[in-house]
Image 1 (spheres, one colour):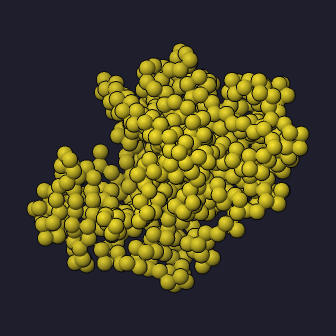
Image 2: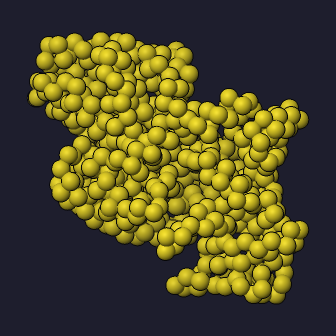
Image 3: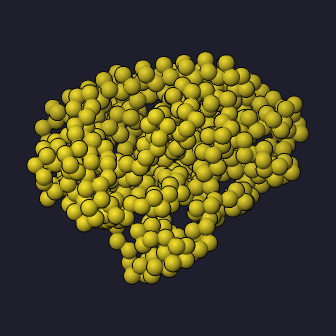
Length: 577
């Protein structure tokens, strides 16, 4: 299926802003366009974007119920009550638990504070009865949930019946009815007026600790020590890196590079990222650090991750990190085998081409990797996809969507036959009884068929600007670097250049199986040469050798080799003329 290329256009009003910002800060029209696309139209906007400052973080007490949450924590500390920090088993949940646990342990050392991560297979996602029972058995009077709890109405009621108060810190979409907790911190609440609604679960935990610090007159520098955890959560949970998240991610990555916690330092070593000449980026978190943290919750226990992230012993931290790396290797093998099995099932569905969705199920699949498999199938078949397995006699799984389609609403339309569900527009989790599987498949298919646009089922490449190689000056590249950290809401800019040719026969096929293309190109308009790498695009080598022109879509990325850093094109797509 050929990708559709769409070049982003500015409205007449945005073009005026483009001209203004280009003159105001002295950048070329292409860079000014990129800034306007990101909502930047004034000098102050640009200053805050390029020079994020921690003093621009919002007052945490603007979050609904924050005053109640801090008051209840203070009361627990005053009474010396046992406090349980409860979080999800993924990156966002475990970093959030580690952050709140570390901070409260430091500033309330005489209190008994414990943490709890539910077992993915025995308890499933979110607040569990087993978790509440654990709290009761350990005489816990206050549970603080992180990255979960917004739909735990029955579980919170159960906790209350046992004399346990709950503070919910979540960032997922809310229902009309909220749990009857002491405080519900979620800026997606309809009655919440907090200026920024896209915090990660760990980000919400950070805001709670920020409020606690303000109330106790604790210097903000003590919170800065935790920003590496927040950056890891923001990158891994794929929340927008805009506004407050951009500030937190910017300083969190800075912390990760300069003074990472012992746990994250051990992970950096395990990933082979401890090269002093290369700075860690969002990509390093997304593709190397995050998957290893997730692997522990997928393959064994999220509790081990928290133990790593709160560790003050370098040797112990490295031992845990090495264990987690083994889980990740095991996860990759299972992931590949499961994806292969899923594709074989799909190959036997005769009407797959006519269906707008994929729902695939095998009771023996590992629950911890169905989300990864759903992502791979969505990427290959480009349809809203759900991958299900069985755990404790209930089908459970993960869903992934395509561009512009609200998967959460599609699943919500079937809520009457679901046991549980939650998530976001593009990713969700759900569970149901096996007897409802066929009905769910058809209702899900019918909803998507009625609401999805035909173009949404065709892979989309959004191009920020069309440029020539002449535009790629050292100044252009240097300013582009300052757009980092990249992520949702601030994606790495994608460019298009037309009519490029092989430069002096230097392009060549590379890779163990000859599947990649190392390109040395020259464009028709500027006669300037530039190099790039095109993964799995070896088929275009013949066009280059025959002198045929190509159109390319690419991003610009730094490539460090033997201590030298150069800028190269990362070729995303190629089309013949």
